[in-house]
Length: 294
Image 1: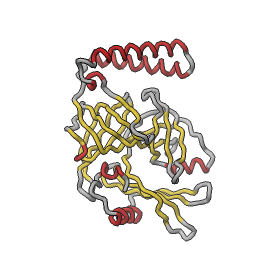
Image 2: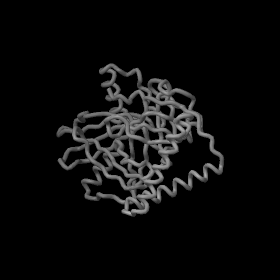
Image 3: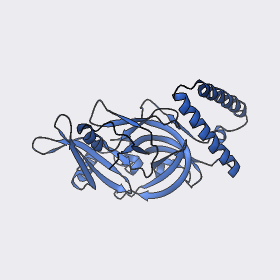
Image 4: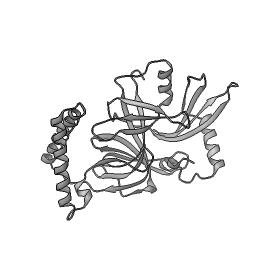
């Protein structure tokens, strides 16, 4: 069974027959479905069913020559609710199945952001129609988590917040210039990183690391779309899986100035996720590319 099913309220689903019955019900009683034909003239289809607001399971496969749906794989999902980035996104197919990974280079993250593509049918339609690459797209990010902790915030007054915002804007400008080959910008970033390293090395002896680091977004493990994140909670609500009744926290966090939605099983979250506090945990990153005209 998919490891992240527990994140959407299916922590007690372990029997193969129960999983098979669940997938059959999703195909028959789907909330929505999409389909298209790929380059091999095979009709691809995706059936989705919501079990809470914007939370559900997608069943993917293809139709054979007798119009019979053949199941290939499934995955749990959380649909994001806000635009995370407007940077260009490139997409690559996974080797083992008709699913896709997206890659986005957002300077606020500092690394290539790799995510599981949710709207792969829309992408395949554009690819077959010869309309790729598509410019002026935006990306909505979300993440499923099976391990998370709530931390208290770092106290910042209005002056501190303005200073941090100015520093972030200045650093983003330097990174953008450095990517275009500006040697002065590269030197400034190098000196800034050295100063930061020196400051943290001195303070870490007497202060906790999470009082020095406010937010981060880092790759985790060997799977390329898994990340360790920490960010400020800007919205929080508890919903329940309509089939199992398990509680699911839906959190919107600001991480490295990028907004993304996260869902986590109530039993997997340590602490009370109040607005203003910080979420720290491991996520499986998903993304929905907002193509113009969708």
